[in-house]
Picture 1 (cartoon, each protein chain N blue to C red):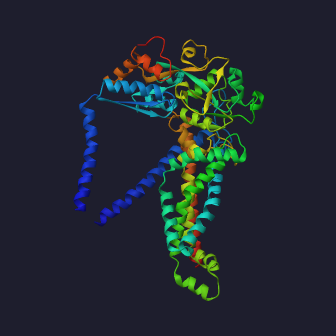
Picture 2 (picture 1 turned 60 degrees about the horizontal axis):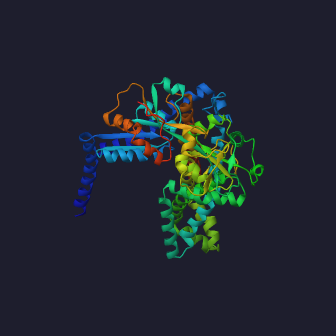
Amino acid sequence: MKMLFFLCGLVSVGFVLCISIYLFVAGIPAFKVIGISDMLFGKVWLPTASTTEPSFGILPFILTSIWGTAGAIMIGVPIGLLTAIYVAKAAPKKVATAIRTSVQLLAGIPSVVYGMIGMVVLVPLIQRTFDLTSGATLMAAIIVLAIMILPSIINVSETALSAVPAEYEEASMALGATKEETWFRVTLPAARSGVATAIVLGIGRAIGEAMAIIMVSGNVANMPGLFKSVRFMTTAIASEMSYAAVGSLHRDALFSIGLVLFLFIMLINLGLKFFIREKKEET
Amino acid sequence: MKKLLSLILTAILCLSVMVGATAQEALSGSIATDGSTSMEKVIGILSEQFMIDNPDVAITYNATGSGTGVAAALNGTADIGLASRALKEEEVAQGLKSIVVALDGIAIIVNEKCPVDNLTLQEVADIFTGKITSWKDFGGEGDIACIGREAGSGTRDGFESITKTKDANKLVQELTSTGAVITAVASNASGIGYASSSAVEGQEGIKVLTIDGVECTEENIANGSYLIQRPFNLVVKEGAELPKQVQAFIDFMLSEEAAPLVAKAGAVPPAQPEK
């Protein structure tokens, strides 16, 4: 019986190892041919250029993914955290149940639906409000991403906040703090690791999203600007993978983008582990 | 009771998978077509008729773009690749051959609120390369938003080669299907884009421009006076022996019965059926 459990565990480890090794093996060749600095810091992406030399600079995608995720986090985390605090601590039971159910529904909506609604409602709205030629911009992608990561942040933060022992809050209020002061000075710091996990979940979802973004962000390989049409690392791979000829430099370059994306996510996860461990040692 | 119910449901699920499997072996089989989004209506109407005539054949169509269609034909994931452009030299060198099933015009579309009705080919080229940036030059207002397709698109390839703007297009959006371009232009008052003329028919919110005074109609495409046009190609491996149902479908699409269907879909049947 133990053997069976061990084998199941081994399957997951096996998958992760296979994917990591494959990404490295498939992603490194393009770096060798094109040159790491040319690829990572090159600003022009024209892999199918026939009248000029093809160029494979992926800096626009890297910066766009960073800005897009940062923007989504800056909007999504405050709203999510405050909602979680409200639902866990301040809301009357019925309101809390209503909010919790809506958040769970929001979590179940497929990304394509977000993309469709974004394309039909959000993009024209942005175009009208900011008087642009086209609303399909980084701004639209950030708003869609922020809405998509809200459920993850709210759910996990709420669980973490509810798990803080009541004694902490009672002690704080016994010492004369108001309820709001208690929440922000005592409960939130105590639930730090849960909240950090929630934020990393949100970052993970935002940086990996391809389908919803492809419909609202314009997909032109520009250096990012809030009101410019942009392409993320994920959409760069998704839109060109299907027709990049097998064995061509184009296809290898796309795998390299995948490798960079993978390394980013690893870095964020490791960063979080460090952060939690430090805090645990402090407490 | 619950256990029994879940066992029965699982059994039905497994059996339903097997039904598909046996159906393929015993009957006439399946045809997988993959590629151009512009060819959707044409392939749709032709495959419907073929499936009515041959009820045991199942034809599937995957709208992934001409570039992907050619790649699928090459590595065998599709029986017939669909490309809305001529094959490139490298592709022919890799052992592919193309069969023209229809001619299609590339309609230049603008939003219905746009005051422009006609452009010359040179003006279209200048707009898309960014030399002309504002609708003010044509009596309208606002900056021009050029909406186009992804790099592997057959429609984009046809548009760029005829307007001689290869690699020089300055687009504001790159979308992945001809339908998406139509939707984007319909929702953007300063948009201009290019889409398959067969897909544009009957769509609301957009206006099809005349190019050099020539309207984008089937006659003008057939007699060549509408300049922006390209072939709809079926792509198969050169010299390969195709399964019976695939060859029969190709023969059907090139026959005289198919010509009125192609016309109904908004494209132009080729002048002479090729064999």
